[in-house]
Image 1 (cartoon, rainbow, N blue to C red):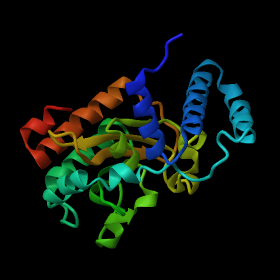
Image 2: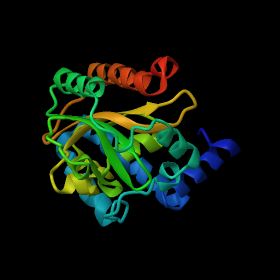
Image 3: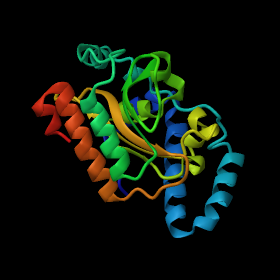
Length: 235
């Protein structure tokens, strides 16, 4: 049986701390999430039964989202974000073209260039929404799904967040704003992610590798615009 070495154990402990959990809880939830994903592929009808049992056993009993505040509030990440000068800036056609292209290419009703600040997310561009005032172009951080893509530095793929063991508890999922979500982090050449290019839908979606690749390519264009050509090449 394969075992974690000392370095992997340290990484595991750090990931658990970032999630606000002890190692045993973190591992149990990770294994349970993999079980749910595998079961959904093998026998979708059995997922609800598995989810119910996991909830009854306490594995998914919590109603709060895991915290990623350590990453979101990291000073280096925030410096990279603030250096762009994009927070609270007005609409720009280049970003609007990117979000329109993302929405059209993925047949999604909504697409965003979202910038994740320490306590809010700001929409530099939003396709499929009429956002007129500065207040409408931002939401409190607790309503942000993008923060989890930013924190992990990897694409976040949710085909039906209502059945996801973690994201089913997210406020934007609970109120029906988001059911399906696909987000790509916008990352500079030092590895700091400041936001995402994302699409979302109010109904379940099956996101294929083609969808992810198209959105990744468009995110590369956005990153190149924000950070310069070297960042765009990383997508």
